Length: 463
Image: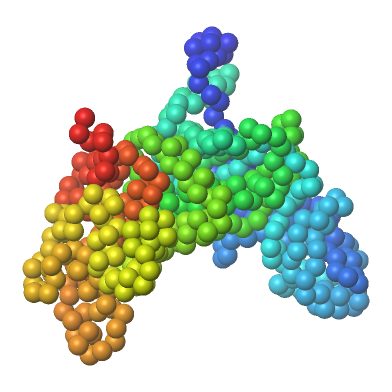
């Protein structure tokens, strides 16, 4: 079938977004610039012939290397005397960096340098506002979303690749790569990092400045991290004006190294995600709410990734639950006012959270080892008591507590952690007014698709 006929057939599907940065294999080096650039401080300026690139290992970031175009003892002294300096490409400041290594060849006096950017690294003129921004996202889990197309002279491709996030100011489209499965398999085999999605940010109300883009992406990165269960960030954001590249941000924003993990979205639906993005970005406008979201998602991710193994992760999870209690129950809903809010014990704080989510206090049926622990302890009456007592046994160092901790089955500790993480997920989804299906990590079902259910407060589950 000819391309013009295929174009008519697929005319209602948007075009697949492809990134400016291509990675065919995990952890591939990304070349940013090759040629001559300047390093400069208050007193000295040196011209370097070399390369600037983004590397993932041994530590992700933007690096440079090269040979000074003028060599000699003075050059060597200057290189070893500079602590921090500007890198300048084509008369524009790329960023600040420092030299990590410099050598001089004894036979010809030639110096070689290596260095790393210490803060922002931006090519082009970031003072110019743009009408759209392309970006890439490494290590993001799979979503089946809106159908997109890619047509070439030889092939036609359609796939449910797009995650669409829209609010009153911006439209963000994030498309899974056409060869996502191959890329993900390569990531599983090699570990590390690989670009799996590419996106496009468009403003509904005027141009986007570079500084504005940083705040938009901070919000987006935090939201995607909550969906992913591990930290992800939009990288290599390229500002476009009339489809021409104006600047590109190579700053090293944090992405967790690849590791399989559980997170709450179900695999085969993006229903409800755009709605909670609207609520999330609305909360983000308030500084205190923004601090709450970044903090609680930080503790959620740390707990979800078993930081400090089960025992350390339980402490982090209950830190998140304490934060949720204070922000939601006390500060926003004002269910308890005054000194009483401080005196309530930890298990009752969790019960108050659960009361807002229509979740009872019993141990979910899928957590059999935790239920055995509850049955074995006379003073434990429900799941809330169980997770708090396990946490107290971990935190407090008295001999009695240490003995109790060592007697608790490791599977019960793991299930207590899963329960706490489930409470965090439910509380955040309740705050964001999500009312659709999710993956229930506490389900007794072993087949993942059978553990997908509506959130407890959803009206849809009774339809």
